[in-house]
Amino acid sequence: MRPTSNIGLLLIVGGLAVLLMGGFSYTKSDKVLDIGPLQATVQTKERVPLSPIAGGLALAAGVALLLVGTKNKA
Image 1 (tube, helix red, strand yellow):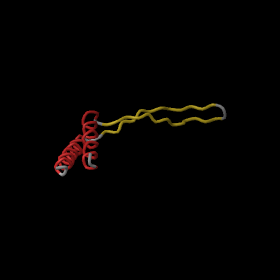
Image 2 (cartoon, rainbow, N blue to C red):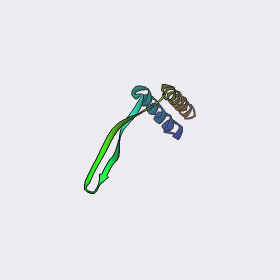
Image 3 (cartoon, helix red, strand yellow):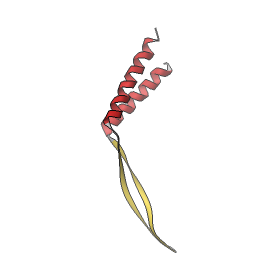
Image 4 (cartoon, rainbow, N blue to C red):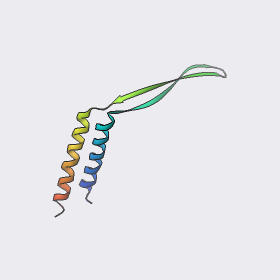
């Protein structure tokens, strides 16, 4: 496969993932108390939303690159 086809496939997979998931979340730990051997931490769950427009654009760009990659093959 050509490099443009590979990049196109990656963009298609990434665009679909963004459209299906809508974002990702992670857990953040913060130390709130540290007195000698006594320690306390707080874990908060954070969410990072991803725009469906970005997913659609990545999907469209991936399809375009895939078409260009197969067109130049002949």
